Length: 333
Ligand SMILES: C[S@@+](CC[C@H](N)C(=O)[O-])C[C@H]1O[C@@H](n2cnc3c(N)ncnc32)[C@H](O)[C@@H]1O
Image 1 (spheres, protein in one colour):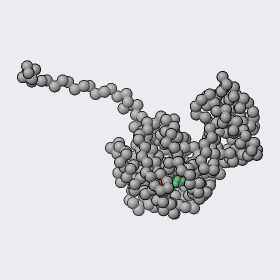
Image 2 (cartoon, rainbow, N blue to C red):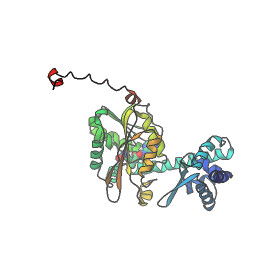
Image 3 (cartoon, protein in one colour):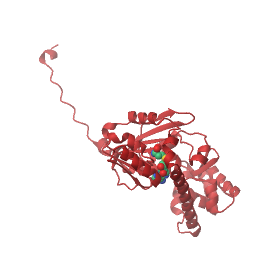
Image 4 (cartoon, rainbow, N blue to C red):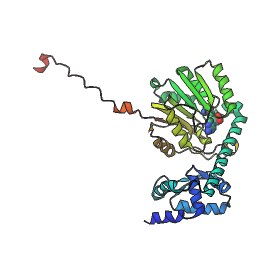
């Protein structure tokens, strides 16, 4: 009763309700909320503190940034799930907030796109500074069931390196990326590697230009720390996987290299296993064991999951083989 009353009290204020409506669209930092709501930082921080204390939002501190997202469990989470339907989408303030939220998201995307435009030519060098590519490739190679893989989609393919590596064992490979500059390099790499069955095209990983259930393998390699809605990216990857298809997510374990935010436009400083497991659960994927490759100073994690195949699950067990007739001599023994 107390939890519910506290949550209801916290919700019953216009700015706090607007904050909840915004956080229902994805996690936000204080400065993003300040920009959208047009109120001072101390004011917004006070509202956020109240919403967190009432169990409606959770605060995730990562270096100097704090992300706010709607609670996933408890009374607050149940209340916020119901509130989502009640918040009037046509209210003029809510509409304006959502327009500004779109602007914030567009700016984020543009800043990441500008970064990749600029570094496209040096990306292969930058990536290999973290953990040796060949160690990651070898670990993925070993972990997957290649007997069931003939098609692969590489989400946020960049210069197409993974398509180049896995291409020779595929019948069909596709890379999706939003950056034309990255794609131009990927195209020439794939041409040079003589892999005409591996193609790349421009697209958004949140809204893939692909039909559902088309691939045996989906890979998201060093992309999630740039984006703001990892759960949506995983859900989209799951959509394009065939039943029984495998998903590989490669990214960093939690770290505190704030410099990667300023220099390399990382939004998130790595991910905890529990967070990734939560996205997999929401996408109804079955998680496989995680692989960790310790680098210095960053650890690379390879999280693997499989899309359940209802046909395989419900297939009747093969009939038991008939008993092998025993020779008469045995019976009498
Ligand atoms: C760090 S690079 C990784 C490239 C490649 N996977 C690799 O590991 O070499 C991240 C890539 O994700 C792409 N990207 C970021 N956000 C994206 C989005 N929303 N849709 C499509 N591509 C995106 C960027 O353009 C960039 O090429």
